[in-house]
Length: 164
Image 1 (spheres, rainbow, N blue to C red):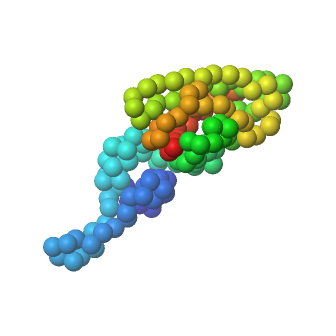
Image 2: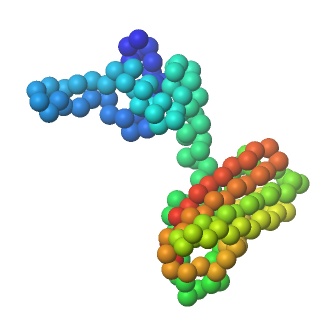
């Protein structure tokens, strides 16, 4: 199949940052990425691109996940201001349903190897962002946070590197 027959494969490959061509360092000639190579690389990245329909669904899922960023990937906070030791989670529309509470579970992995958890409920999920307290006072370092949200119609999770 040529690229014209697999437009969603090409779109997914582009979204994933796979180059459509490169210059051969020995000959200086351009080399074009084949559909087979796209499929292999995307598969190695954990994406289903076995058919054009699968590639389209994978691309839609990735775009939706990008648009529903619950937490920024990295955050820097001051150890001297413990009042700021809360997470601000942006709630995705698919989690919010009037009259239904939202449950959250936070896991904090400290640089020193400790693990701390906290959980709670948000009774008014239409009020976004939601403040989620960190479960432990933090020392200087790089820490990893996993925030899981369970709504009436969907579950989502996000990870963040927290630098103190």
